Image (cartoon, rainbow, N blue to C red; front, side):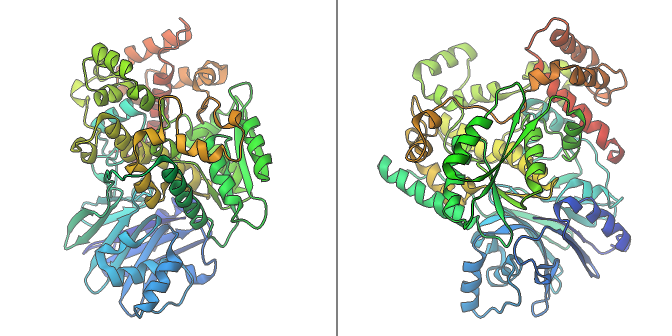
Length: 592
């Protein structure tokens, strides 16, 4: 993995070497192994590198192709780069390194803007064509790797892997978009097609972009399509096994050791068991648990023993407020998923042993592993649901996943015009799918990239570790998405196909036990004195940053309800507000 920056414009003299170093310095954790810059009259590119493929100087970036006068700065991994290189060699392209970076450059020469369609992996890159004075950018299909952009006062165009690098240019300051803050209060994360700043945008996932002559054009190169494929359940299970095995094998390619996160759940256990067959020695596995709370460490140990891994456990403590604050500060936008913290701890723990880990991210979204899918399929529940809330099942789902309801947010804001219902992307909004299919598409295109993949990228990169997600191989996703819903989740079994595959090697009790989440025990933490003091320090303080736009009295009523009346109805709302205050406090120096 890496961190990338770029500056394009007619007057970029202010972006000298010192400025570039400052920008790249904010991304050093993304790439501690190497740093490079390239300068042209109207373009500057920079990169910090985490060396994983081609550890030699041949993988140094930004990389320049002298013959075609093009240069690239790239963040990510291309899993099919060897196959692509052989195909490009047959077309006459010559290679001087063993890196996947050079393969992207040659693929761009060969395929132009269709280049991303040929790439399998996670990526965000920018290619500068010096002859055309044109910048070509692209992100992977699911948005695993980030890419932000902004314009300075002189209309120069800036890009970076993280927003903090744009701020480090000293030419960009953040103008808060309070309607997106409202989206955060709704979802506990910022929708992936938005940012929390009016003047800073994100290149959407599955899109490429071209900047030329002061104009930016963005186009989508891939989207999920529902295809009803006639196939029996047994055939579907076997095809799933084949595609997942192929996906894991591709993600075992690296010039460094690869480990695996192992929670003891179905997803990570299945991934790790498949990975075992592609490793010459026991795979290092990593798990985290909480003292005195729901703890999956015994199940992780059981899985590790069955798979014969080199297993490592971390027991999290109750009094880790400072570590929690450190984790939150790595996000350039507010993000309150309770699993951010265990992800941070686990990444930090694993980073002392390996540079790359496999994870089970994406399985719940892909295989309908959440409770609302099963509830929706229950006809009596659907009838009750419609009767009670007078809305479609999809609208009801959106209502159910909100942290603060629209009514609560109207009361929360000092200015009610910030209340914003627009957090659904056009792909979901314009689809003609059934309600359960629309819920699934929302999870895959909004919750997955905005919540899970943002967490994985930021918490992994905060510790200079790359997290690979075999369930998000696009060929596997396209196939699973096309299957009948009851192949994935029926009336009694979540993630049916995955459990049937894992059940061939693990016990029925292990596979079919009740699902436990990966999140931190927020409610119990908030009641601990260390966290209680933090909440009062941050949110019972009249000078809290969020009280410039949110209603102080209403928030203090929630706190009193939780701590004095001992009610749990506001516990996660308090957590979301606490994370927002921490974020504002650590980022206000960058705001206008």
